[in-house]
Image (cartoon, rainbow, N blue to C red):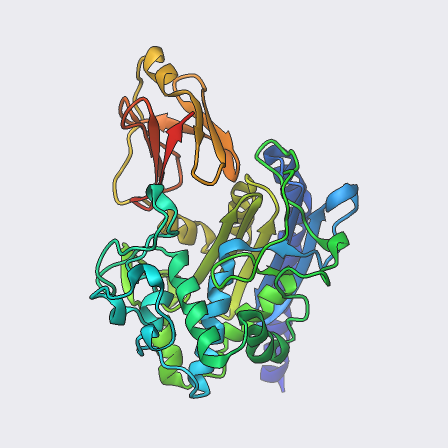
Length: 438
């Protein structure tokens, strides 16, 4: 009896300590998130915490349009966080025996731009979901207008929204249904993701977090977007938490198929790989690993990290170009391994050392640069550094490592000025865009 009583007392003591720690975390987020938002000109932020496979806490900070307080079910455009949702739909179809991960997508769709290409039959769902199609991110990148291969599919990593759109065409042609119908049928309804959809006239615009730039100025652009496998899904923090919980629980998939999903398909950098639909962060304490994916677009910065072994995680959504700075602060505060996860994701293959260069050299790089889609990037001098801002670009200071190369501290992002007419943006060591000076 005494032993049983001792156990009960010990259990209650541990439980009280855990609850006290959780209460402290929530109090600190309630106190600091509004401060971080104000510092970074972010009007609205949503946070969801998951513990032991359940939603522990949901909170939306700030306002939606018109200065109205953001409701708990605020609708966010999640940009590229759409990709894991497409991947989970596809895995459900594979589970049902309706789809094959390794069947050539050419059986259902061939883009006219690459018809007859010898690599055509190497494009499969597996190469799409692990970003190994060989396609650029978008066909418009690097002054191109047609889809092309940058490398042989299945040989290395190359982040590509075009790959996911290729998969969308194949799915729609196979099932004779639009992607949004497939999503609702096989994913949203079964998971109770009742606030997740693509843009339509049925959207409750009073709950939608419209987009803002790095200075906190609302974008004067349409927020109406089209159906895409790679981009522009609209959802709430709660619904994405539901997706994360379902994913961590195995999606109802056979063990072998779930193991395939979380198996590193291609290495990106040390302790960071790509699985099927998710980034995989390895080497965390206690044998843990993380499934992660973010979203980044004009006025959109979101991030989700899920830890399958402990069934915990976090979802953070914002509606501003500087939202990445808020999401990172929240993640580092809320997850014990948050700093390690972010550092693993953001660490570059090369160490960048800050140097001092002549003022006239810095001034020679300043000006306005224009992308093919009309988006502008402004480069200004900020002491012995440059400050960038613009459409869809966080307002940030980058430091020189040479006379024409600059880096963003804490992130694997660099700018290079190869001449006085253009600049090149690199992320994770890869060229993501080259834009021209106006």
